[in-house]
Structure formats: C-alpha cells, structure tokens
Length: 269
Image 1 (cartoon, rainbow, N blue to C red):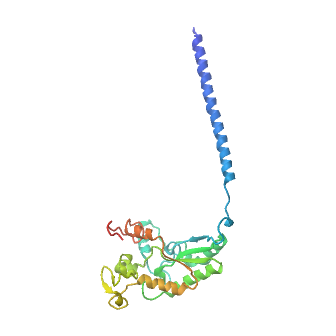
Image 2 (cartoon, helix red, strand yellow):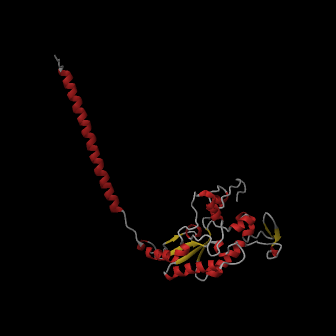
Image 3 (cartoon, helix red, strand yellow):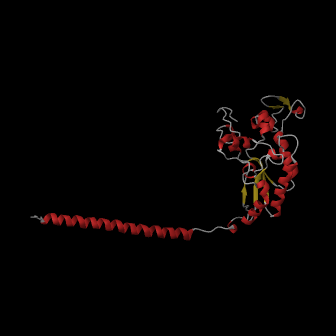
C-alpha cells in the first residue's frame, strides 16, 4: 500500500517546474549570447579594412631582411672561413642545427630574388659575411666573396629592388675572436681616445696609429672600407651592426648569442 501525500506531490511538481524554468532561462541566455557574439563578429568584420599600398605614403618602402649566416649556407665553400656564429652553432646550442646549408642562398640567390620580386618587395636588407669577404678578418680579400655579393646586388637592382646592407650580424671572424677576443678589444675598430688609442694589451699615441708598434687597430674599419669600395656605388643604405643591443647583451652578458660569453655584471661589455 502506498500512501501519497498531496503536499509532497505538489512540492515535487513545483521543484520540477522550477528546474524546468531554470533550464529554460539558461538555454535562452545561451541563445541571446550566441546572437550577440554573431552580431558583434559581423560588425567587426564589416569595420575591418583591407589595406593595400595606396593606404601608405608614396615613398613607403616594403621589404624583408635576413642575415648571412642564417640564409647563405656554403659555410666553408669558395674560401669562406669560420665566424663566431659557426662556432656557436656547432657547439650544440641549437642541437644538431647549424647554418652550414641554411636556405642555400649562396647558390639560389637568383631564385630568391625572383620570389622577392613576385612578392612585390621594394627592398631587401641582407648582411655581408665578414669571413666570406675577408676570411681571416684582415689581410687578403676573397675574390669569390666579392663576386657573390656583386652578383646578389646586381640581381636585386635588375628587379628594381633596393639593396640594404648590414655590415655585422653576430658573425665576427673567428680568427679575430681567437686572436684578441673580437669586440672585447678596441683593436677591432678605430676608437680614438685622444691622444691615445688603448686596448687591454697596448696603448699608443694617435700620431703613431699607422705605425708598426700600434698594430691591428682597425680591423672592422678596414672591413667596412672594403665593403664601401666594392659595393658603395650601388648600395645607398647601410646598417653598421644589426640590433647592437642584442649583440652586446646576448653575446657578452647572458651568453644566448654568439660568441656566448657571460661576463661579470660590472663592466660587462
């Protein structure tokens, strides 16, 4: 025998009805949110504008940029010698990765330039491999290096693409790094602290700067002069060092970039 309490039945019905009302309200809110989001999305899409070249000033330059070690490949072909980037990459910092082949632009520069033209680029910024142009950092110039960069520059110009050149992108010749520490020593660049030119190992008078007893005082300057002499008739835009802050902090403070040195926090340059 079952005894049914009318009040219990009534309360259960109210609970079911209340639950149904809550679910209906929740479902209604979902529908409202869906339509609001849909409407908002449409309004955003309508408001968004498709930009093209005519939205930029007439002389605005569209371009792309690379660095020699990251795209050229041919790391030890045609007279090129190691840079600090080669040494850094082959130390295992990138696992098995290195720039020995990279994008092979050394052999495929014509195809690359054609793709740039098809993309509609106005300019291309690339860096010169110091150790390809002057393998030991100073001394004899590598004619194959001169030939490659002449070919690249001429190919760009033939398509109406402006060549923009960076002199240094994390790839100081390893020979200079081994000899005196590369950019840790003032001998790599012409720095005149009148009346003396000083480094950790020597200090000579400015008047003797070209003398034999004041050697190797301007390796980077001499390299830059070679670049200007060989390519300056066609290259109007030059960058001295790519992201100099990254070169200094990553290379000589945190050690995350070539040459990967971690110096003390005081005088860490």
